[in-house]
Image (tube, rainbow, N blue to C red; front, side):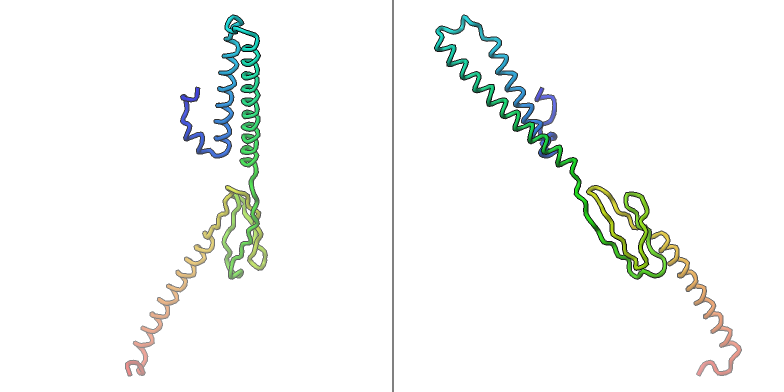
Length: 171
């Protein structure tokens, strides 16, 4: 059964994978010892002292295996508890300057509104994402760049027309 899967992949999962392998090894050990106990026939014992010694040895082995499995089970439960626990971080996000078009802030694809000072406090759990969308800001910048380009063209046209009609040009 242990040969059917890659042990390294199981160990890469962390504490839970290690605990799982410990439980599996403990189960196999317990199963092997119990099989040997059940396969032992009464005729195999030459004396009562030999039987008592064998009985004490087997009981000790079974008790040790059970303790090992109990420890492995606790380690496995602790690993699962660590996987369930997700720490929360408080992130203070400030957008400066707060005037004009503000970027859209998304926490797990839900929009978060900024206050009038351009700040927001985010409570982020592990493996959650915060997205800052600059679409509106970029559209505003493109519109302003186009307006600037048009104003420069108008100014160049005005200068050219002034040069053509004025006698004071050309120092």
